[in-house]
Each structure stands twice: as C-alpha cells, then as structure tokens.
Length: 203
Image (cartoon, rainbow, N blue to C red; front, side, top):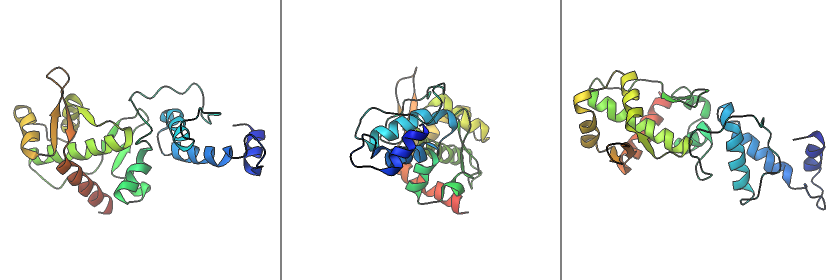
C-alpha cells in the first residue's frame, strides 16, 4: 500500500472513496502476519474478502511474486496459529512451542505424548495433527502417507497394525478409497485433540 493511500485511510474522510479502507486493510494485514511468509498473500486476500463481504482486493501488502499456497484454503477457517490459539483459549506464543509450521508449510507437533504404547501414541499424535491441520489450513482429511510419516518421526509406527490402531482408537475414521485413502477426525477425536493440545501448552 502506498504512502498516499495510508494517509487517505487514516484520515477517514467520509466523502473519500478510500475513507473506510484503512481499518479493513490493517485488520487483514494483522491477520495474515500470523502465518508463514509465503502464505501471507493468499491469507490476506481471504481475510480482506471476508471483511468486505467478498469485494475484490484493492491492494495487497505482500510481494506479488509470493508462491501460491499449496493447499486448498477457504475464508471459513484460515489464520495460522492465531486461529488455533483462540479456539484452544491459549496464547499464540505458548502454542508455538507445541505446534510449529515450517517455512515450507509443514506442520509438526513438538512435545511427546505421555504414553509408551505405540497404538495410543499413534492415535494421539494423529488426532492433534489432524485437528491443527484442519484449523490452520482448513484441510479436514489427512492423507495416510502423511500420517505414516508423522508416526515414523515420533517412533510409534506399527506397520502391521497401522490402520487397525486408528479404527480401535475411534479418534479418526478412514475416508477415500485404497488409492487415495486418508483419515478425518471423529467428534471424539476433536475433543481429545483439543484436550491434549491445551494440556501440552499449559504444561
């Protein structure tokens, strides 16, 4: 946004075409700053559209060369860690010690769960991961290979019982077919994930 535009927005002249634009843009900018840099262009656009009722974006405060977001995102639930923090009723800075998003947009759960059983660890890590991914990226379904990678990184991957562990945990349910299988949180999974994440933040 140019200096002249900022001045117009801040003066807030009722007869100026940009009189009400400044506060809206400032809110959208603050919202976008909560996510990694290469997501900000898309998130700003979505926030601006939501704030203005779907009107086209007049100006974007991020570089036009920023790469496209690799995930499908809608204005319904976008906002990075700040949005997830509000739902958990915790501080975003405290949440960032539990849930991390890399510059490449990769999500990770940092602490270890309080369990030594692979099946329980698999279900709990996956539930937290799926919950965070849904709230941050609006992606309800997590591909099975992504969950396999998560469990390998947490040393709780059980090749022979991987899908069975999800079924008996009742925290995630399978979606899709064998070629594109993924998992989605159940109602029970949402509650368990929220409780676990909140406890980790407050620990």
